[in-house]
Image (cartoon, rainbow, N blue to C red; front, side, top):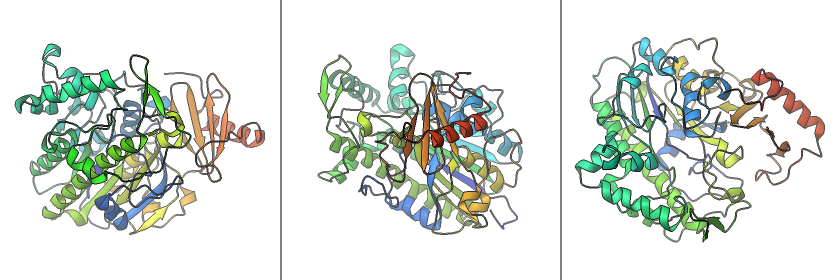
Length: 466
């Protein structure tokens, strides 16, 4: 992608659980979402915004394992959040480090999701085995609350260390305990009691700047910034939440008005306030995107830095009566993707069928490296340069988790379940996935089933093999 002789720096901005349509520059089939993301919008104007990027597995650890290894769900080695990526696996970060990159990560990378210990300073030997040269790793919101308690051994990551050192951990943990008592952790729509400087996303943003400050001027770097938000609980600082007071958001598609609480009682859900909170967290992260971009510019490196913005999976936000992810519906599997930098056409919008793993192949390509022959990932360079038509990238996309498999050709989407009836949706005519066409279009269903079997190399793609 770059005409520069020096390998470009690689800045990979990767919040957790950010659905594709929650951007100021994106449109939604459900109505325009009034979220403000000016810095990400500016990045889109500098590069290519992909409208059809889908996660290979809409759950934190599997999605990131797929991304790191360049392999789809069946081959990534991480079937759910109860597993760590094996230290023997070769990652995109190993390849970049071996090529001379300083490989940096901060925030919640979740490659070692199962292991509570993340290092009080954010570094463990395992991160080195994954291919990183420097890190300030932290846990996600709920994990930090669970493992940062004194009776669990105290601080176990950089963020809980910070909270303990600043006398904030009990406030943080107490609020999460209250959410569990009074509602489900995602239905609680009040802001965090922490001041913004102590909030997890702001801590992550500061560590990104710190890692850049620790890098010398010469030689290329790769920085992977993993914000814990806008992942549930939807608990933005009040400073951010107040910006959306009274703002009306599109209502959920086929949503329900209540959700069972942990004790079984029904809790009415304030869908509007939950969506405001989610948008507020997105806007907070967007501000950090701007600060990190400013830091790269101050270092004199902006013109030779490839910038990627995406997310591991989406968030249902009440669509189909669901929150969180894990399911093959669009709110869960459809994610944003923006790429800008040297050699990338500006202000372009692409409807190429992109899988999340293609980001890793694209990073290697940008660094001048060959993509490993056993990867499922495909580089996007020809699309980014405007040399190939969108349809030349992939004919179909595949996503999977547990007992379901999904294949999408851009318009039609087929979902197969190990136990249950198949589903077929026309995303062009029915973006809300409300009408199952499987019984009406058996031939199309059969063609997509055959394509899925060919992509996975399995005549029964839903057969659990992990």
